[in-house]
Length: 70
Image (cartoon, rainbow, N blue to C red):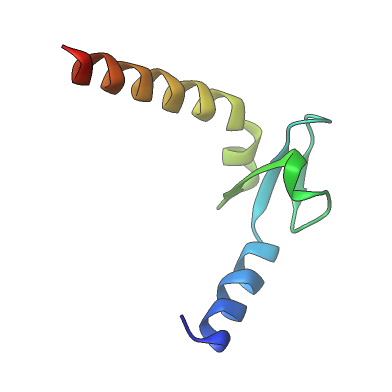
C-alpha cells in the first residue's frame, strides 16, 4: 500500500468514531490509547452500540466454530 494511500486511511480513521472500552465513552478520532478503543464506526450512534455489535460478532463466531466442529 502506498504511503499516500495509508495516510488517507489513517486521516479518515481520525474523523471516525470509536468506543472507549475503559471509560464507555464515544470518541471522535484518536483521543485515547488504541488498547482502549474499538472501531472505527461511521457514526456516533454506531459507536454507542459498539458493545451490542461485539456481542453479536462473538455469538456469530462461536456459532461458526461450533458448526466447524460438527
